[in-house]
Image 1 (tube, rainbow, N blue to C red):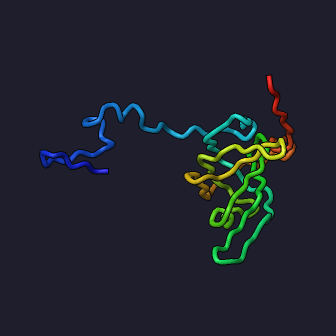
Image 2: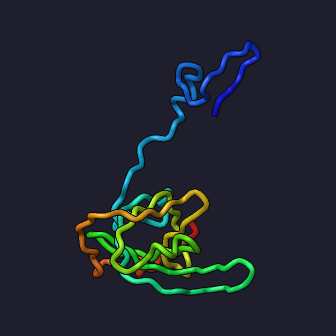
Length: 148
């Protein structure tokens, strides 16, 4: 964003020269995690995964075509359930390698699953050589909420 001052000069808002405090709050590089490292407390999950299976859960053919899919994705450490909608659902073909950015962990019926939110991204990539480990199902673990 550009900012025009009252003196007529322009300054780029993201420039650390004009706004030194802004430089300290700029986002850092994305930290990618393995599927086995995802826990109920995880947030802003970034991972490189492959689609193991996909299933359409809801399809509304009205004014706005809405499609909700539950996709099992994984890497070499395990698999997890991912819930996607609309445009992201078209990318989830079995065997496709995807970069998952800024996903949210959601607990449903005591089990963990990932969900794409407003600022999440799902992009296809080429050349992923790993094979998903289907024996370690992170979404299969049941969690209980304990009050202390």
